[in-house]
Amino acid sequence: MPSAPESEQQSTAEPAPRGLGWRLHGDGSTVRPGAVVAPDERLHWPQTISIGVQHVMAMFGSTVLVPALTGFPVTTTLLFTGIGTLLFLIITANRIPSYLGSSFAFIAPVGGAMASHGIGGALGGIVIASAALFIVGLVVQFTGTGWIHALMPPVVMGTIVALIGLNLASSTLAPMQQVPLTTFSTLAAVVICSVLFRGLLGRLSILLGIVIGYLVALAQGQVDFSALQAADWIGLPPFHTPEFHPETWVLFLPVVFVLVAENVGHVRTVGLMTGRNLDAYNGRALMADGVASMVAGVGGGSGTTTYAENIGVMASSRVYSTAAYWVAGICAALLAFLPKFGAFVGSIPAGVLGGAGIVLYGMIGIMGARLWVENHVNFSDTTNLMTAGAGLITAIAVTSGDAALHIGDLEIGGIALGSAVTLVVYHLMRGITRLRGGEPASS
Image (cartoon, rainbow, N blue to C red; front, side, top):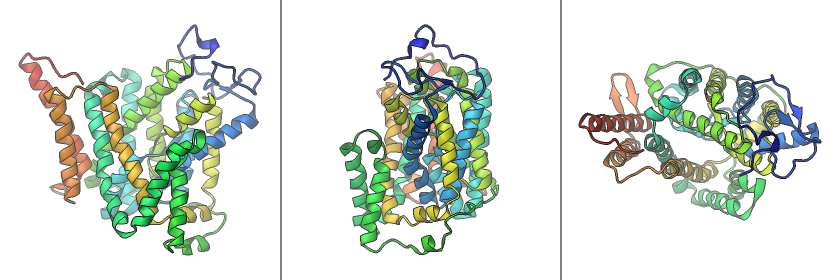
């Protein structure tokens, strides 16, 4: 991990915001050994633009894969990730370098909402979840993050993240059964590229795997080019308006927990890498992501989140300048006005998406386990063991049985029910332990 720049060795406190300007780092062309380009600095514009393009490439594969999996318009999603990134930079006073790409946490609830109410119902759920995230950010801005850690300790957060990934697994079954060669060729390509290449190519392993899988599908005649041929080269992306159906909102609320964890973790990571204390910006980051996702939901785009993919670009380049993210956001928004590009992404066959999904959904599930490991969750303690076990089994049982809990018109799916069970079991057991004078579990 890079050490803090010399100018910041004496103090890790983040200076007060100075607007959206940047001061030139050193000579504007090089980064000294042991130094980093801070968020409020930049290199000369040619270097800054090239790094911004790298950020577009880093986020691209995952960002376009989400609308491809959910059926959302690709170009619309790209537009709102670009706009959302710019909004994030403005709201965080240009201090948190981040790209807001499509969030995989929304895939399952979007699928459930679209099945009953179409894309309008899914967008309504995104808006509601995003508004809840904004409210959480507003509270954090005034009270700090202590209450979040108390409500969602690592054992709870890890379980919720894991069950979201595991509940998406069923969507890969049909491609495995119907087009196994394409599905497993894509899977193999992603896996091999991730270890065969280093640097930027290694971080683009999912995108490279999709390209290879696409070629395998093309050789088997599984690609339909009719929409691509009919699409214009330049035009407006398609827009959709949200519809609000309260019975679907419960599907989206667990996503808020994941977005909170991703945003807080992102701010902490950037602070460590730049040698600055950015804790004061946790609330702004959450509010900014909430606003960006609400704007996307109102216009027809996918919900967003801070992207870990782009942290790799920053770590390798040692450039944390928010100027590069302004470039990335603008570039992504411009891509949205190429309908033929969106139609090309839309032509990706189900087998390719299924192969990529095996990797991505599995990674989401294992990220939950990673939270347990990194935070030293003690599973010899009954509270932690039952919390994780009850939440995961409830979610998996509901999803594998293709069923849901019905309370009147309210339908509660596996992710929502599993998340609720996780929270209730943990806090119920801890509460009883305290009442009987025992020592609560370390989580």
